[in-house]
Image (tube, rainbow, N blue to C red):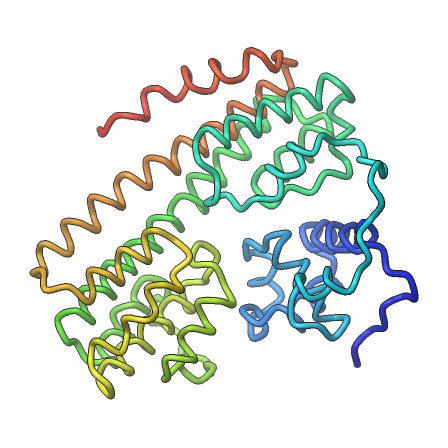
Length: 342
């Protein structure tokens, strides 16, 4: 049963609820995990471990709050709440910091990512590291760094922990997601059967030694596929979700032809996925498609490496009290070697 909104709902209070839920989820709270499982469709069939591992954004948690009140999304909830009067309390953080912190890792331009660290530095100098206690950052990796710093973890150890997570977990996931996309686009483009495509894609994340587990039905209609694209950002899809998405595309292609996939392009929320869909429907050769997507992958992964390196450098700068006006040049100079192809 849905919860009831209070007689005089307050948007600031609802935003605080969302931030609190995200913080509880990041702390591994079982109740938070259950709420996410119940009201976030893309994780409704996931295990507790998979939910804790998932990159859940503040935006998605806001939608969870809305659904708990019986509404479809956060925008509908906002529409029911009277606007706050001008001049209300702005909180402990600058509006720009709150705006930048609410973005997903893949949504930043490099300039915006640098600006985020400038704003974090300003906050550190204004209120100290402990002032981040109530700040919700949509990128869990940055949140992890801030918590380690607030726990007085030595800068070298913070660097080592975050660097290990980047090298072992985060960066390989970014690369695998794109390699799965290349494999799927080429397979659908050249007419591979849905069963063969699904088998190819599972090789990226299943070792084949365990019996297959029960799965949700595959998306088989254009509407099903559009819903999948709307429910979960491409950069946050699990490997299984990516495999199901592309297998569903192959099924639709077999029934209605390649042109039936064209409407999906406008629903692609990530440039790499969008370009992949465009090439899937093109007349270019297999090798041309692979070459274009591999070239784009190299560029995007280089950008990812730069942002990950900036996380390490930014945390070091916050802990060593580097001045805000020094942050931009520091971050750019220290990542200059990553800007050129190897």
